[in-house]
Amino acid sequence: MIELRKDYVLDRWVILAPSRKKRPRDFVRQPAAVSAGSNVCAFCRGNEKLTPPEIGRINSPDSSGDWSMRWFPNLFPAVEESGQREVRTDNTFYTFSAAYGSHEIIVETPFHDRQLWDFSDKEVRQLLQVYCDRIADLGKRNSIKYVAVFKNHGIEGGASLAHSHSQIMSTNILPSLIREETAAMKNYKSCPYCSIINSEKNSYRRCFENDHAVAFTPYASRFNFEIWIFPKRHFRQLSGATQEELAGISRLLQQALAKLKELNAPYNYVLHYLPVAEDGDFHFHIEMQPRFSIWAGFELTTDIIINSVAPEDAAKFYRGED
Ligand SMILES: [Zn+2]
Ligand SMILES: [Zn+2]
Ligand SMILES: [Zn+2]
Image 1 (cartoon, protein in one colour):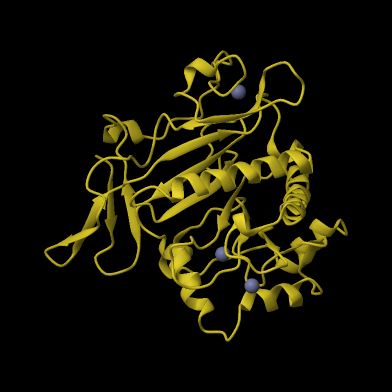
Image 2 (cartoon, rainbow, N blue to C red):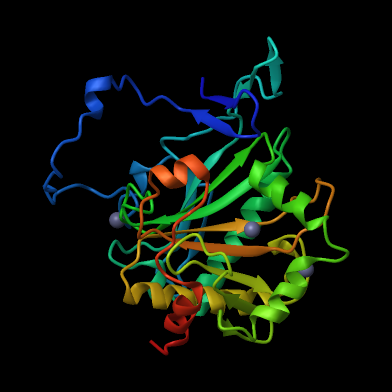
């Protein structure tokens, strides 16, 4: 069973997903292996049989019958729809449940060498629409409290496969981070992000803007070239966006990705939203986190991040001034 456990006292959780029979000596660092080059990629067109059964697909616009995106359960899930899903506490300090939920992969393109940053606005929008649909579908299942949507790109971004893909993970708890952000928003009379967007779109941290969305480097950026994308109108989750707003958000995501391509950046991005069932308010956004630096002792001791690129300089780069 994959287990979900809470820290003794902090609102901090881990998923224990032991990989099959990995022994301590298997962790010994080896010099980077040279790839044999003949590895078959399960995500490439023609290798569909190598993945678990497909949940859905988008057909390519030509009439070839081929797909342009497809999604299916992760062969190595970090959560499973089995086991005891209610969180309980034994002997005061041991809070746990099964790591209950589902873990899916969206392969964004049939082509091995094409990355998300090569996509058109329209293709990025299709991907956001798939995110929306998966959140709606998985979010209404029993015991599911959150559907996490994220992308890992590059080795430092945690992508174990080079073929461009996103991941969707539903879980039986609302992540502490989302709970914390929702709680912090309650300290303001109205949505802080609605004001922040207005202020940042005219600041040194402005990056991109269109009729429906704004992108800026956050004031206290924790990552080199971190960039956030917000819809201008206030809504809690992506499904609240109109088609025009979805297009506006996709356009900014595409613009940010195109700049990250210039740096060949490893990166993660994550969707932040509050599910319908939860109390409180939220302003949907996407946080994009390039992964150039490694958090070390100071960061781990203090939770204070040392960032060597000022967000004002990063914004210049995004605006093409540097
Ligand atoms: Zn591939
Ligand atoms: Zn707002
Ligand atoms: Zn956030």
